[in-house]
Image (cartoon, rainbow, N blue to C red; front, side):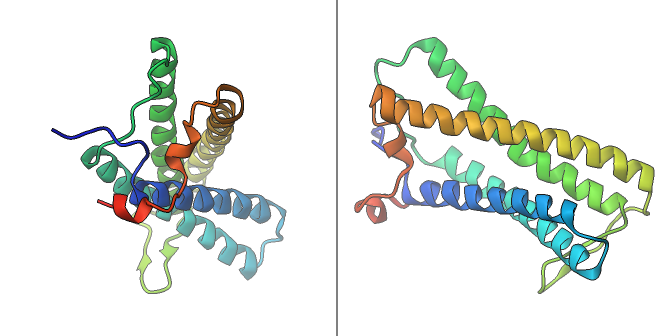
Length: 185
């Protein structure tokens, strides 16, 4: 019989914080791109943004696989069922946005006629450039990104609420400890 761990394993913790850093980098690069003149540097920054988004997509696949194959800590015993349901819906929303935002971004780039250069290899656009379609998907991408930022902010606020107000140890489940090396799958 498998017991419920007190915290996530080291791989899940690493993926969580790595994705947080990559999502933040993608957001920062997007804001920088908006302020740049149309130059080769802007194209390079846009490509970097596409790479960050592609990394998010790749990591979310790994994250889902690890999440489905490893035990996760239970919520605190006194968690109200409505709060547990809200946490589940919130996390499902975050996963949907981790997939949707970069996927729509890649589609936007491809309809713009741009591929993605990863340095060691490139992915060419499978679509013919079509500016109106690209603009349509760009609008969706940006709206979803703002929703993603709001969801991330809510996620962080609830984590801090659990840590500082409820003091239920929930945030400790996703932090590295000395014993994390023992928890890797």
